[in-house]
Image (tube, rainbow, N blue to C red; front, top):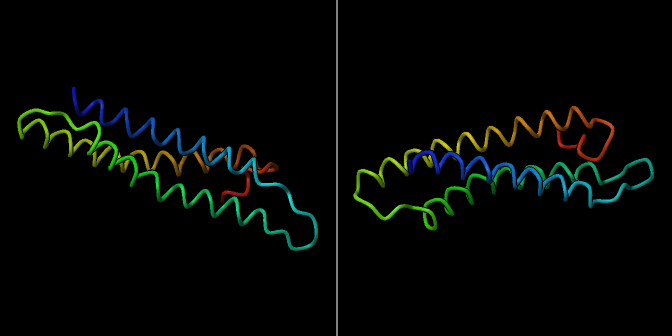
Length: 112
């Protein structure tokens, strides 16, 4: 049961970070001219949040949501949390890529 909650928590964290990345991308204004800096800013924020996603997901899962049980349950939870963190990171990248291609002409299209 605890391992399922670790997977759910890391997946929700990935979605929250993806939503936050989309909000930041839409908050950055388009710049005119021949050499605008706004696409690079959107890409930079996407990758900063991509790095913070697994770090924050693991730390929150470990220090806030870790079950108070025997060592075997805790070890299973930490193992599931580690795998869930990796899955959440891959999910963030894949969904970011898909959204970037779907909204290629918009602000989100600058992520990749």
